[in-house]
Image 1 (cartoon, rainbow, N blue to C red):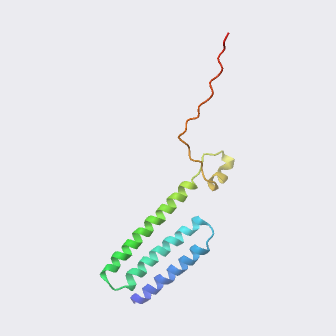
Image 2: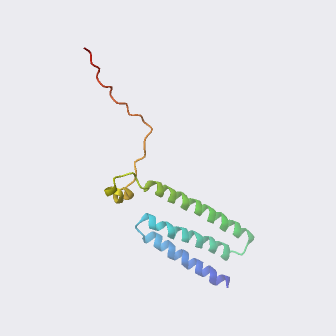
Image 3: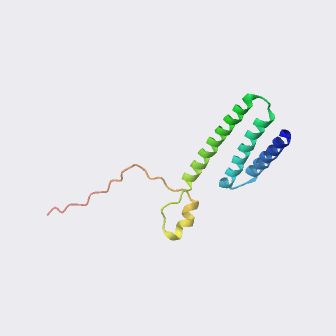
Length: 115
């Protein structure tokens, strides 16, 4: 029975890996990468009959989850909605927002009247 469950996890991992490789949109790749990570962690835990296997599967799962969250967070901040006029909202969501700089722009002082 465990072999059947491991085989199903392996098939799911291969399918998710293929979909992640073939998908062109980066944001659509992330769910497939997460599913692949879950399936690989399950296969690791099911195939090797040793108590340390569970620790290895947990370590792989935690590391893969942290990596996926870091990638998703970076992409989410890159494609966050910008403050734009209402007719350009769709375009603003597709283009990266400009990060405000800490530089202070000094305005040229107005000329004084010398009369």
